[in-house]
Image 1 (cartoon, one colour):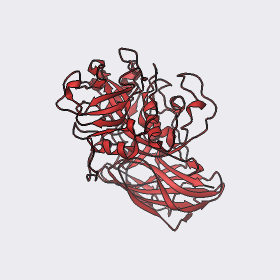
Image 2 (cartoon, one colour):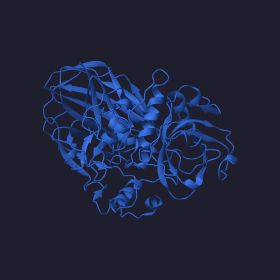
Image 3 (spheres, rainbow, N blue to C red):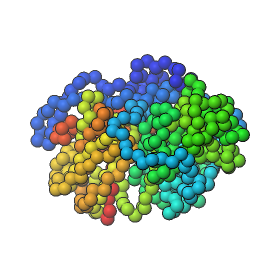
Length: 493
């Protein structure tokens, strides 16, 4: 899709389907606190949206092809993320990473499930997602999850074989729509899905890696593979850059070609540059697991040069972690389509968000989850019970608070370390103060984007934001397309 990067866009407006990514006018707004007092607060703004996503959506709107195929008929399927590219830029304090081996291969450590085949369906993102999750769970447990369930039930607008992203996988998994077993919903491309599928694991944490900056920026990706298993990585696919005799790939073109997702399962720092079809500047390659069957490449695997122009540089690298379904019994959240943008003032890295929930059963709030947008994310979590409608900090504030810092981007569940009792039919709230060091749109939100997340919805009395933690504004009052903050609560009965 080299056309995507070269299409001009007028400001931040995608012509033809009316998606504005500029904030509404005005720099400040009056809000009321629980005491009824009027206070002047900065007006929320939406973070910049990914220009690649905007161009992609324009191309799709005007009918351009949008799922690529290789010359031998293999489907691709990467869709650009709508998120601000600045979120995935490296930065902050360097992490302490232990010495890394020159050669590492998960194939030799019983950490991978068999290579699968996506066929002619643009489902690479689903296969990469579960390739990562299945790898994380091995060798302690061996699972084969249903890609078909993910591509059919993700809830987005692209259709079963129309492509996807790691962000779409995250939304499906965070709301506990899956994963289910392959045997419950086999991969068939198009058959209607069952009315229900048994949930086999809860995905409560997803590491989202920063984009690689160049051929030597590999430590974070390698460290994640060693610690957890296979990592989902985005790339551009160009047939002329693949050498079948060595199952090697190196693309150094200037245009962004058709996108694809694979799993990084290892590397070889000494992989000879002479093995590639065209010669990169130096040795070294990642070992990647593909989803084109064992008859392709090196039994389904191939080598990608460290010097590849786009590998791991498209807002897509992620590691999916799974845990027991018995850890939590209920999942309270409104953002069924997950994280599609951020809001804040654009000048301040600290903001508050809150959700008000009605208890579906008596139980105890045990944990809270949200997405993080910076290298360092300091949080304070408060739980209120017997909350009044539209006022997240009324009622009874639980005496304890959970405070800490998350280092890195992704989706994280924070166990509170204490249980907060909730009563059937009564309202409770989850309130979070979030400071994202180096990024000035702290609050992750779900938005309704035509052609992408048109099924996103919200109702009055659900999601709120505040500059000071006192004067709360309902999120959707800022913009009808802003549906909910991405904030969830998990309970035990």
